[in-house]
Image 1 (tube, rainbow, N blue to C red):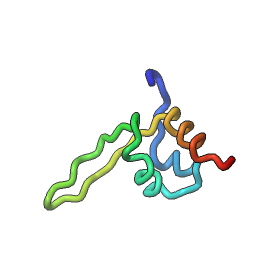
Image 2: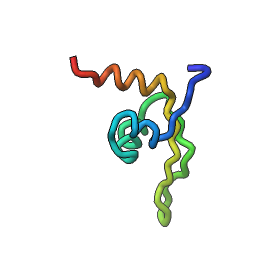
Image 3: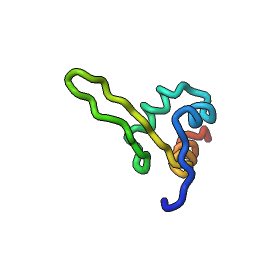
Image 4: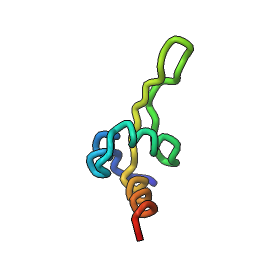
Length: 67
């Protein structure tokens, strides 16, 4: 994936009609998704900043489509 449009979890949530937290859970382990967040430590919760390529979103929609 060279030049691709990156979407925020809020934008993907609007497309899929789910909450942004659901988007983070579903896409956090997908290949190609960029995570700019900070790691979790003993005293501080993890902060996630995901960017999801449109190609990954299209592949997800294609795989989950009801046939």
